Amino acid sequence: MEGVESYSNAIDATSSRDRVASHTTARGVTPSTYPTRRANVAWAFAAADVHAPELFDAIAETALTQGERFNSQDLANLAQAFSNARRSSPKLFDFIAKTCLQRGLGAFNSQDLANTAFAFGTAGHASRELFDAIGEAAPRSIGSFTGQGLANTLWAYCVLGVDAPAFFTAAAEALPAHIDRLREDFAASSQLYQVFLYLQIESPHQKLLPVLAEHRQIWLDAFWNDSIRPSQSQLGVSHALNVLGWDHEDELRTEDGLSLDMAQPSTKTAVEFDGPTHYLQGPDGPSVDGRTAFKRRLLGRLGWTCAAVPYFEWDPLLASGATEPYLRGVLARLRNE
Image: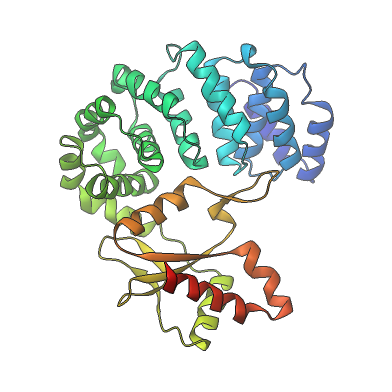
């Protein structure tokens, strides 16, 4: 990607990432900045895991005024950069969807289609019209999709609850050729297990579901391998719930393979501690990402009742000692839902 390597090298070579972000915000992102450069700046900062909210907000603001100057790869890269950076910008995603629909997706290759769909899924930003268009375009280039690209795109459709019969049928025919590589790609295989669950629970597809079911153990092994160890904050919530008399199991795996932070199997109730990785950050505060919302939806369809403890609500309570009344409120919500 033109320009990305030089930006990434500059970031890696700089002792203060915040200084680079501030400098770029002040001088590099203006209404006259070329769209490709702007998309590449965002992509590079996201790839380098640089926390630069002001930079991303500036990129979003200026991008909204120059839609006609973006090409298809610029749009795909911009969406991917914001989702990778965990930055929420509903207006930007609306702009990307509108611009893609106005131009059509003829210039999008399979990677552009997959990256765009995955970015919208990660952000939890639904655009039925855009996904209908991707669903029509993707089968025409299905042979050039990688296994990861197929997994990312299928996962995004399931996260947003959008059906795409033509694409799902084409994916069912293309997926077997990628099985060997997918065995080594835990992230993609983990996503395919979630796709399998979605199709089994919410939207059975006659051709795709049997293909996924045949290799279910591959997807499930990857899904379990992708589990995150509990944080100290989560362990603190667990201990506090025990003190309140709410007996539970930690890191419970349901019979369907989903994990729960703290759960009572007998009542099918659970408390989930949601750390920063469960949220996108934006000017209006944190918002739950697509992955987390998708998991909760699947759990609900499987009969579980879950209550979330967001980190930004829990952490301030530790200093004030107000954790007990807060958790009593959480348990009350569980009983009433």
